[in-house]
Length: 373
Image 1 (cartoon, rainbow, N blue to C red):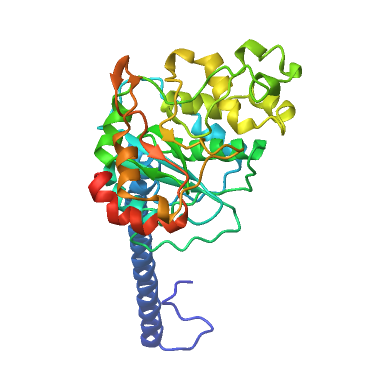
Image 2 (cartoon, rainbow, N blue to C red):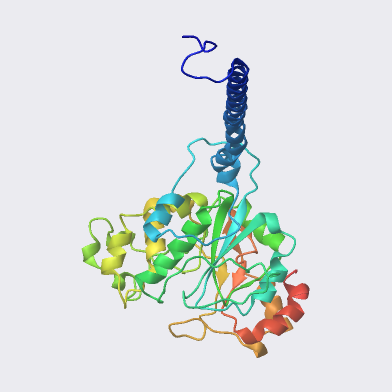
């Protein structure tokens, strides 16, 4: 029976036609709604690739060359020493850099706490921001209070306790080197203490270090009890007594030697286990290891002047009364002669120590006259 035929339903034909039209109209509305929904869904699907393409540069940035060569503004990180040394030991195998590299000097300050001579160093560094980096290793419990205008602000690396004469002091120095190596533009590395001062302006220091073919590590054979007398036969066969060397703790090395130091797993364990007080490891590890591995790259002298004339286990410490015109003139002019790049020069030292906090005011007063800044 058709829908227009009379059956048991006694409704008039006109009502049935109206019902059919309403049903047809309702289905049309449903189909319209469905069509609009499908169209919107299709538009959303079409938008997704656009969103992904906009996100893509963010992921590309993480792997860009800029990300590898741009030093982090924050020297804090969560790496332990093993992770840090591994990361810092990466060496590009292609000789030429695919970008314009301005070689910098990394100034590494090994301190217990404050840097009382920081204002003098601020003056020394001023105007040379693209040519240096700064790293500070101090006691982990120490909270620095450098003003934001200081070059030392925010430059404290993750540190651990370091004790003079023990392997922990070597760990601290290697930690400084490793952190500085993370910046691919750092080419030379200078170790300093909180009592060090520069003896010349930045331009003189940069030119002297950058033009030298050698690294300034003091390394000499001392036959006395304070030299060979500290050698331990248990260091054989890696280290023979004829290879045993002594030298100043305060050094300057280039990038190659810095990497050699932090990747060393041959000589470090020997010193850790067999060079303990009265064998002062900070006087023997670097001089001996580098003498064995790269003697032809060493100047066998330190760039940091100290005064041992008063005797004792430590060099002289200078106070406020010591910083006079005559004293600074003598230090800055340095009448001695020494050899650099196989040529005689009167610039034998670039830094000096040990200067107490009380010397800051007279140093600031006289620095422009005698130190050149």
